[in-house]
Length: 71
Image (cartoon, rainbow, N blue to C red; front, side, top):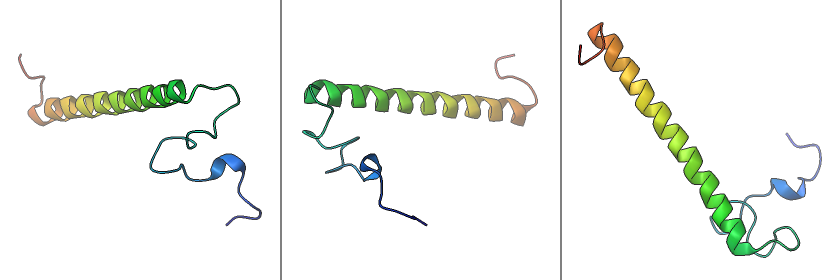
């Protein structure tokens, strides 16, 4: 439950983009560079989650067989 108005950065991003809509960034910020930075952060997050998923799958395979595969 909110007790007051939302903070300026708490609003949903515009038009399905990550972060604030283009043109509402920090003063002097290049919109293209800001978009590239957000995209790099998104890819880094996806890669971390994929690695965790693969690692979890490998652990399940090891546990199911009672030993590591390939030995």
